[in-house]
Length: 198
Image (cartoon, rainbow, N blue to C red):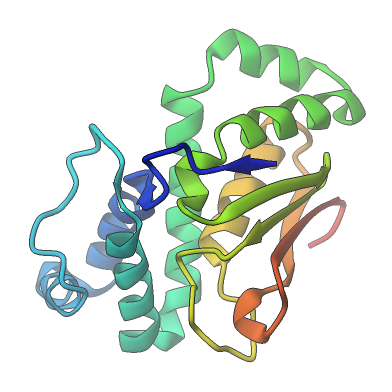
């Protein structure tokens, strides 16, 4: 089980904010983005050089869901994919990516799952991450949805990150679904990656 590093429990990676900004701007324009940022209380944006307060990211995600409920799912998904693309471009060496792509999915998945687990502290903040197996992840007390209630799963951003990484490095037909969400009353947010599903 991977948890936030000591002294970093209230921090999360800046991509939880940074990759959402251009998505909002493209969808609604810079003026609407400025309004959403103001309502989320984000006067200073991260520069990408360091971890950020998880509550800043959580407020932005909450504000987007409240202000633009019809578009929030699509936008969180786009931001999650962009986050995975950033990870692929800047965090996973090319040689490692080539090896994973060359391996059968059954061998690549455990290697990718271990890498995700090692770096989980960067995207779960003070939440707790658990890799149940190579295709199933859980986040308990996910800060991006903490205290929220919803009839549908809310962790679209996380699911999109996992899906893009698996579809790129393990098998193109990998899809990730959030099967249980704490916002729906479950104890954990559970993400399951399956192959061959639309």
